[in-house]
Length: 194
Image (cartoon, rainbow, N blue to C red; front, side, top):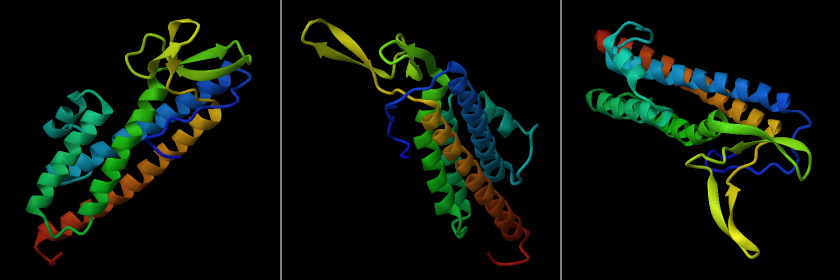
């Protein structure tokens, strides 16, 4: 599954609840990704992994939108790497943040989608809302008025796949953040050359 692709479910679900359950799971797992991104931000701005009352983390929480927060952390990390260019984990951390940014679009689809019954096949899907600013395209209709076509149609299996990707991002980002924090503690102590 690629983060920049919006799959089109061929077969929906028999009940709306099947989709609601995986939507909740996916959003909870994305929140775990957000937590891990905040952890990396904390390490590069205040020097340790957990500082929930620090002004930097409070500022992080004030930024709206996953993509904006990830970009802020990416900028902080790049600045931090100018001070610590010998950190061998920098490229890994930058790469995982880019992957988080790419997956943020699928998180938004899940968070802002609408569970609805498709009358043509009597199955449930997650669609972009009819009135959403993103997620629908106006297409020509040879029989009259233009049609508005959704960009995606997700079933529970697709959303569960997103959820698995979010969990993998969380785990990988936590590992990188822990390694960066450990490296920084050793390097900044002056006891050992990194």
